[in-house]
Amino acid sequence: MKTLYISDMDGTLLQSNGKMSDYTKEKLNEFYEKGIPFAVATARSMVSATPLLEGVRFAAPIVLMNGVFVYDTETKKAVKYHEISHSALQKILDCFYEKNLHPFMFLYSDDYKLSIKYTEFDNDGMKEFYDMRVDMLDGRFTQTDDLTNIEKGQHPVYVNYYALPQYLDEIVEKLKSIPEIDFAYYKDSYSDDWLVEIYSHTASKANGANEAKEIVGAESITAFGDNLNDIIMLKGADTAVAVENAVSQVKEIADIIIGNNNDDSVVKYIAEKENA
Image (cartoon, rainbow, N blue to C red):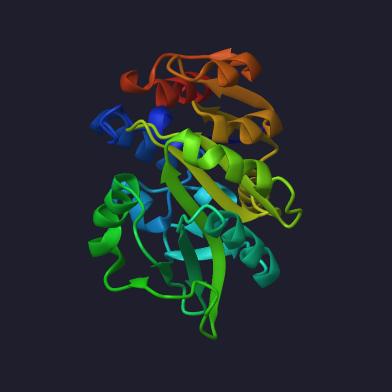
């Protein structure tokens, strides 16, 4: 039976320093050569994910931004993406503006480009997010007075915000009342901030994994994760695997618990299962 193996990146496939080990890269390329379908499913965009995956080839499309994109790393184009409706976008922004907070908005263009718009930085976490990505986006990180002013050929796909929970808990409760959207809310792997990531209700890591499964013609999914935004994918998988460093809620729903993210545990598990 052909299995799609799909793994979260930060805290799962990547080491605690946010990088992929040489051993994991070597094994992933072996999987590609043997036709073993492996993909990542991450909250990262193509801008921040692809540099970390450099030198690795995939026999399956990868899932980005919590399922907003199913992305072909060979053609560098989205196989599929999920747009936020303009009415839902206004409701999302209102939730933040009522608290005088200003999120990032991600757009995908008809010429396959990702860009990010913002109005201002409210805290150090938001500024750090900008600083880490501004060069990679090569001029497609732009400041505006009105996030709802969207040019023709641009499609809103994602809204996010970094802050401590006391700034976000009330906003998250209000987001639950917007039926056209879904969101992930969890602690950042590298700081004390929490992230809220908002997207169309048709997008999720679970849906993205199933879309990748159909594309490669797999019959089952084995998914790997460590954090709260992985739970929906793990619950939808035929086999749910948690790394040892996963949060307790992930371990509770996992079928299997493997070693931690610093021990190449994901690729070692796959290699054992596939005798690869």
